[in-house]
Amino acid sequence: AAAAAAAAAGGGSEMKQNVQIATAVIVATMSDPAFAFRESSGELRRVAILPRLREVTMSTTMALGFMFGDPVHVMNAPSACAHAAPIDMTFANGSVRLDDPLRSFPGLDLRHPQYLGSGGGGAVYAYDRAETVTAGSQSRSSSTGSGPTTGRHQAVVVKVSWMRSAASVGRECTVLNYMETRRVTGVERCRGQVPYPFDNRRVMIAMEPVMNDSVASISEIDERLRPKAVRCIIRTLVQMLSAGVVTTDVQPLISKATGEVLFIDMTEAKIVFTDDDGDSEAMSFLDMALAQSLVSEMMGLIPIDSPDELIRVANSQLIQELQNIHESSGVDKMAHVQQQQRQMLELLREQVRSTFISQDFGDYIDGMF
Image (cartoon, rainbow, N blue to C red; front, side, top):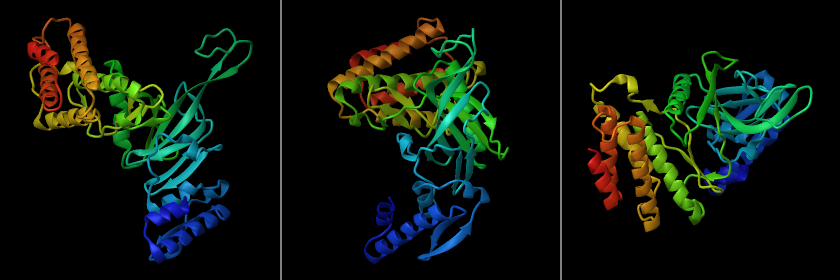
């Protein structure tokens, strides 16, 4: 890993020097975890870090992080950086310390943390969720018998914000909760928000589900699963628009096993209107621009040179989702749908016209207006 990272930084004698530096960083850090090392003008400089790091052994990912910045946000490789002990890591944006078990979130008993990655919003970890079942009580666990029994359940993602990103990570949980009330599917669900215990200027949020073995492109999954992925993308797009939620950072995880799509990292998401806003005000130019960006990015996940089958699937799913809006609003046409929602759907109509559209979908959406 050190050689590969160093090779990417240069060639020839510079590469050799970088390999030597990277190796020195790892060896020195593993033998003396009270210090981290970084390169400055081709030389190693010793930088003191928190004394508590003496209690843990920093991983190769940790050491390379000091040289090249924050570790890459890798959502699909939790096993690569698994921790069997409490988390204690330092990044360019701050440090992260998490307990094992973690019981900061009401109703959640989280264990066995695994580092997933980091980004501008914070550092992300996967925990196994354990639930305690007492005699005579019912639970989603199948455990029986007297006394407490621990059952293993689907993993939970814990995101720890940086100080500068605390507000956006907090809003992410708020937006996810709102989308859950509006029955938006294909996005994470926030299971709690609490202050970061070692610095109350930062926050932690717990989210589920965790999708393993996933990719970011439809072209990377089996052809037989692609229609399902297209349906998932269209469904989430229309549901988000109808709910008045937009984001400028679309990050899909597409399951290689099922074709299901999960959209993650909603730190940039924004609620541009709600049902309580009434029907008096149109959306602002900026909000319309954000919505247009969302539609473009989501539709861009479906390759424009897709086979006819995928195009038919996309158009069919668009019609089905619009029909669902009719049914949920309790009206036959769009006359009573609030103005902001109409703007969103009109935007969708125009964006779809510029990509792909069937005669059936064109006739249907034109009839709506």
